[in-house]
Image (cartoon, rainbow, N blue to C red; front, side, top):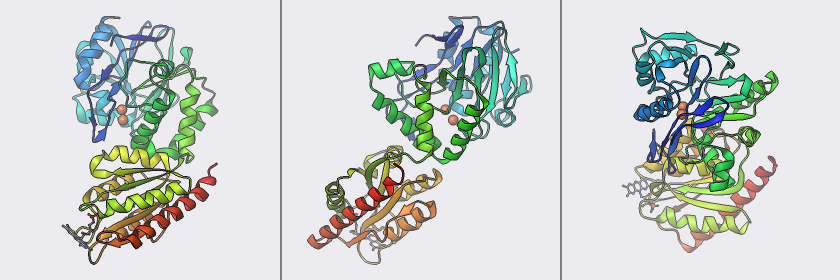
Length: 405
Ligand SMILES: Cc1cc2nc3c(=O)[nH]c(=O)nc-3n(C[C@H](O)[C@H](O)[C@H](O)COP(=O)(O)O)c2cc1C
Ligand SMILES: [Fe+2]
Ligand SMILES: [Fe+2]
C-alpha cells in the first residue's frame, strides 16, 4: 500500500503483512502491519523501520516521497526484529543518517548489526530534537514492550508515535480508527486490541498505568496516536488510552471460559454439564479445546473473561502437555484480577487437577477449590457433580466480578 499522509508533511510509509499467521508463536489470524513514519521537514526524519522482509516495500514508499539518501535522522523506538531489522537496508541508502535510540536500544542494536560506522546518538526521556519546523520529544517506556522501548512525540502536530503500545495485529487497508470501524466494526477493533494486550502487554499493567499517568501529568497534548502495528488513532485517541487503563485496572467480561484438553474424551465430556451449570446461573460461557486452538487465542479468551476453568486428563501422573504449555505461557503473562478452578478425568492415582491448582495458586489469581475430578468416563452422578460445580463457580465469579463494577 502506498504512503498515506497522517499529518502535514508526515506520512505512514509502512508495510502490510496480509499473510503472517505465526508471529513469534503468537497466532495472528488477521495478519499484521509494520508501521513506520516519514517526516518531510528541513531534516528528513524516519521514525522506525520495518521487518527486514518488507524493507523493499517501505523503501518504495519513501522513494515516492523523497530520495532516501536525504534521510538525516532515523529514530529507533524499539529494537525488536519486526521494527528494526530493516535498518540495515535503510542505512545502506542513507549511510550518513544519525540514529536516535535509547541506551538499552543501542546495546541491543549492536548485537544485530555492525554499527561501528553508524552515527548513533543515545537519547532519554525529555531529550528533544529540532528537525526544522517540527520538534521531536523522546519518552522512554521501558518494558512497553522491551527494556529499550521509547515513544516519540511530534510537538507541533500533537502526534504520539507509540511503538508497540496501543497497537493491534490486524492487516487491513484501513489506516485509521474511523476507517476501520466503517469497514469492519468497533467490536472487531476492540477484540484485536484485547488480543494484543493479552499476549504482549498483560504482565506490564502497572507500568502502563504509571506511564499513562506520567504522560497525562506532563501535559503533553495528544490528538493522534500512531502505533507501529495496526490502525492509527486519529478520531478518538482517548478511546485506546481508556481501554488500556481499564484493562490495567482489571476490566473483564462477566463470562467463564473452559479451557481443556483430552485424550479419550472423558475430560471433554465433563465440559458439557459444567458449561450448562454456568449457563443456568445466567453467566456467559465459552469452551476452548487447546489442541484445536492456538494458545494465543486461548489466552485472549482467558483475558476477556472474569473466570476460567482449566481441565486436563492425568497423563503419567501429571498434566496433558498442551495444558502444561498453556499454564506455562499464562504464568509468564502474570494475570491478575481473574478467578480460576480445575477439573479432569484420571484412571488411578490422578495428579493433573492437583498440578493445575499448584500452577494457578502460584500465579496469585483467585482459586475456587477443590474443583471436580472423575475416574475414567463420567457417570450420571459425576455429570451432576460437574453441573453443580459449574453453578457454584458461576456464582463465585459473579460475586467476584461485582467488586470491579
Ligand atoms: C498414556 C497414558 C498415561 C496415563 N497415565 C495416568 C497416570 O499416570 N495416572 C492416572 O491416574 N491415570 C493415567 N492415565 C489414565 C487417564 O488419566 C484416564 O484414561 C482418563 O480418563 C483420560 O481422560 P481423557 O478421556 O479426558 O483423556 C493415563 C492414560 C494414558 C493414555
Ligand atoms: Fe515489540
Ligand atoms: Fe512490534
